[in-house]
Image 1 (cartoon, one colour):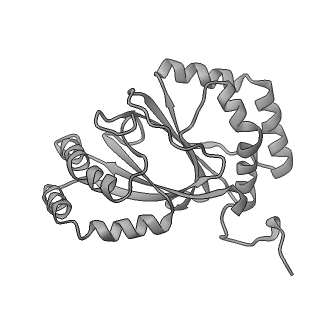
Image 2 (image 1 turned 90 degrees about the vertical axis):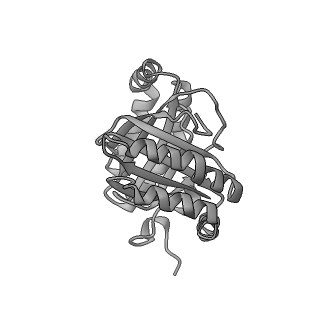
Image 3 (image 1 turned 135 degrees about the horizontal axis):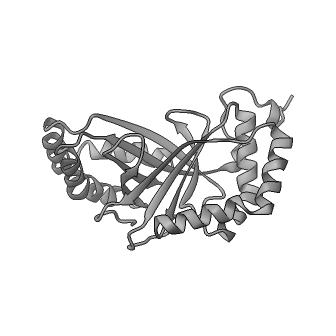
Length: 245
């Protein structure tokens, strides 16, 4: 017998209707206060980003933390068409002699305190990542749900009323994504650029005061018994060489 969405079982993840197939690989580097950050930026700018641009294309974003649990910290996000393209490109890069030499030199110098990779599956309600050469502030939010049923309820709210309310209030995330490999699952992660910290504060104040948002939130609670809390909110600035700034 076919199962309904609510009966889909454990560890299935987000409902297929909310997936697009597009993948965003997020790499997080926690660094010391010495020379690690300069060496990392040099490796990304001169070696890894150009190699990925040749192999993959897709959006590339490099961010440096300004408000985060650990600083200094750098995020590197690379967009792929799907998981298969990410895996194939990773294998091809292991055959790139120039990249391997640059990586070996960076790695032997003591590259970071820790490094983590998360695979983010972009949702169907994510717009294409638009290019920008203007430096901006970026806010990364991660909302964790206590169950997959409630996680799908969160996507239902975003795919329905929440994104239009965001836009009306001046909040335009570059993407919304479900983490398919990484910490604190299930979670919804989204990255939002703002022209400045003042613009960010104004947009969120407008959103919090919006009556349609309060009605949508209450409806979500009534339907799913849960509203997500902002488990993680961090602020970043774009690196000067980031293709998307």
